Picture 1 (cartoon, rainbow, N blue to C red):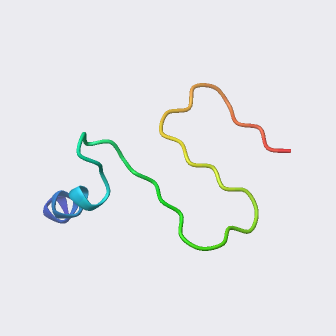
Picture 2: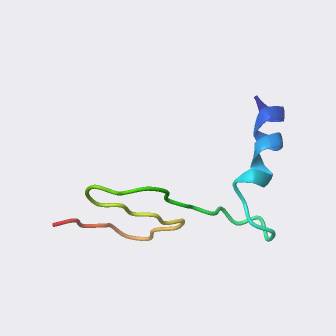
Length: 44
């Protein structure tokens, strides 16, 4: 499993090693993408 994660990591990070989130297609409802959240998220 560790080897698989190491092999896949370059496909999910940018050059600096940060995670990249991408959405393709239509989104129905709420979409939240975040890295670090300090505190809460409230959806109304």
